Length: 343
Image (cartoon, rainbow, N blue to C red):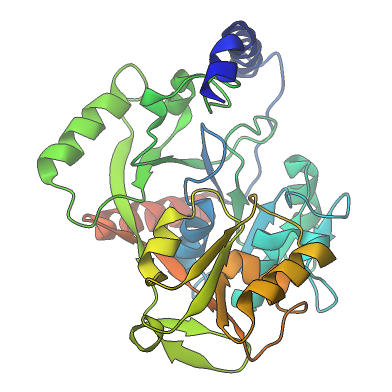
């Protein structure tokens, strides 16, 4: 695979040139970006997959939903539907996509919508009788047709965008210079004990030549101490030594497995956003036999109607700040409050 990516290097140069021209046209106003009269926060990345956008969106929901009417707007990756859809009681993961459906199930007090055309999606949300006070755009950093009021750029600790290259040789969707659009940068999936020296070194690398005004924060994935099914929960410590089947259809599942795995456990890995077919379900049942099955929260919303409730569990995660979390909260709340007042 690495050899093939090196062969495709000329295409990476071409792809980078095309995306740079596109960004230049938006920056100059030749291609039009649309702003909206409510706070719009875009969470995204420069690379493909695996930076922890879902936990970050959930963090913002928890931070803001007690005071404001929140809507999330996602593309609905790999959904089997088209156009604008507002989640309701008849929705499922196939209609919305797994991550938006997870938002809908987890946060019943917010509005969850999907639309590949983010501009149209925002316009439809603003036509609702109970229109949102704030819209959170999921994975929309490259969606330049909408000009968000606040941009949060994510980059994973073990895969910083400054060490990456353009697709298809690397994983970047656009040039590293795209980071200049960010109001803040969050380094995700850090070790909990990352030193201040290491943080400062990463900050210097990320801000060099990109956006010296953006503030850099560091977060880690915080795993729950319980696993959950549709009707019960178990302490992680209780099942650590129990034989079980672990399965994940997410990008970079290594830390999920490491948190739960014991010597006799079996792990099944599927592609990110995988649609589980009948043959997959048969494989899972065959390997599980009488074991409990533990999966990610994102996979659970796709599997809960296909596997027995008594044996299927999920492990929740959340994004937690290494330090300066209060400063992050303050910046977001100040942006939202100022935008709301100005509206």
